[in-house]
Length: 234
Ligand code: URA
Image (cartoon, rainbow, N blue to C red; front, side):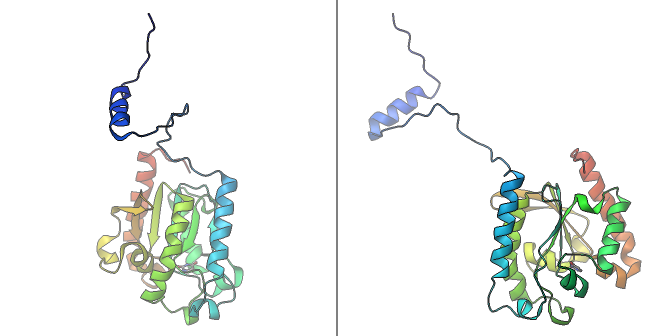
């Protein structure tokens, strides 16, 4: 007697095939249900492509007034991605985010929770210095938010840290207030993936308002706890 091996879907498939007269192609390979992270090489090439795309932006007052693009800094394989507002004078000169006074404070903040700056990945909402360090306008924030979402998708971090109201506005819209929302974990969906995201004060704001540092310290401890709870080594 011939024994027929069937899996549990056999009858359903057969019925459907008969009913709809579908020609199925059966694969030996299992269906891939999870997405693999791109290799470092692929990721670097995606980042290069994104950087080129941003550098080719047209009719942008920010680009027209800036010295150069300020794309990112740090480890593209990091589980932690930090997003600031936009380059200042020093960043515009050096071509890297957070290298001025706010950057020095950011380094200290990371040190305080045992994270070395080169271990994280850092970028900004807008990649060109706004003239006279003005805040990016909503239209500019929305325009660059498309690139930012692509950037998040490529880095695919375990946690996202949004520093300041511009980063908050780019990814959550204008309805939230940072003083109310900081320090809480939120879920941000980018390209069908959910990212654990926290809002916190921008280091430049803390330099102007040192009395607010106590809230920032509380947020940093919340971030450290999340990393420990999720067993994320960095
Ligand atoms: N402020 C930012 O938001 N980003 C920088 O890169 C520097 C200062």
